Image (tube, rainbow, N blue to C red; front, side, top):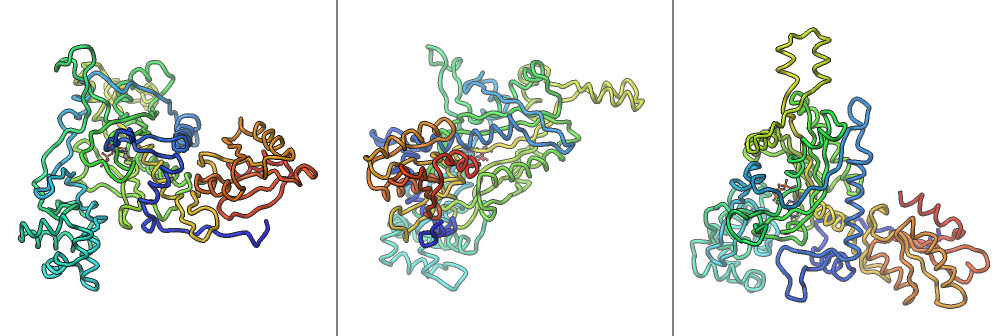
Length: 545
Ligand code: ATP
């Protein structure tokens, strides 16, 4: 490498990254576009552009590989048994009665009495953490634990308040009793309060919020020509239920024995009340879920296993450990059937230095299969032949064996968002590079996940260079996602590749024609070296992983 051109990519803390810049880069470089943009967009829906689709597929394939094709090695040294599934988005609506979604898939909602916005009550606190008025109020009272009533009154009369929070100024004018509510909310944020208890201040305008009420999140449609109650169906709000519905089919048709897993990736739909933070919370998204069916006595052991395995998987995407953590659910957060639940969380740029959910790993007991058994009348129990033989060898009584060898398996469920993983990789890779001459940003993806692995460029579009570059491109494109580009100056082509996260570029120049060497230009360091053109494939194999 020529030392004079080597630069190190700065390591930027996620809290210092700007979501506005990330969203703008995603649009400008073809990762994510607002859905139906020419009609003004539609709140909560996004389209994945050419590069976003490639990035998403790379993450999807990595999950599928590690779950289904090369599942982890279990505690006994053998690979686990996990099979894949692709179930229907629309199922018999009784599915959602059994699963509890019809009755219970409700978010607690509050309305702001001032600006009338509908908000998820359990998200208010985290929204307050990134609310401009809260930041501004807390900056008005530095050195204290946060704002008091006097600070709020002073702030409300300031020019800054009119700039960052005109809604708040109006709310306080109309209802002076809000001063205390607003001060309390700002104080709690300043004190780093993380408890998701209800805070009665609107993150948008500081107005008072109503008591939370339930709101059903499932999208409804009708199957068939007549739009009546009998034909009502739901778009699935999670992929998991399709797995439970097929558990018996899998046991009967595949050579699986408990413990085993069924994995599925696919679209899910939730009529989220407050879709926000770009693709973090959308109304249409993709999930990667696996249901691990095991003996009830072993469920706690498998819960620990999957918890660690999933964290390892997230790290394998190239995410800095410092930006990931586990968060155990408190008892009052657990669903009534869930025995244990932990979230894998990431430090998103919009969580103000805090963490937000990326994946949930839940010990669901035998709730789901029992519910489907009760609602469908179809036996969902599992006959454990191995256990039967073991008990016979141990000399157990017939009754004991009969009682123990048929049971409804327990389930450990690692449930993650594929589209949320796309967001995490974009946030993690996003690095502003104000000191670089070409690109303003670098997306420093781990090479394996970069949408394009290599750019192949003739230095100029003449003197036989395009022909050599094209041949290299044709040789490589079946093995790596490559792009051939002949337009613009070489600096601009490198800059574009930096901004879409391409780890390597290979440039064919005048020397290539005489000595068969090409320039390899590396994304993160902008360093260049020359290698023989015949070595390019091996170079990529070694460095892409
Ligand atoms: P939240 O509390 O954030 O609404 P959840 O706990 O209901 O999420 P799960 O039902 O456990 O989420 O879904 C599993 C995963 O699916 C989540 O960890 C997340 O990655 C993803 N997910 C859930 N809802 C959405 C959404 N609206 N948009 C994008 N991804 C989502």
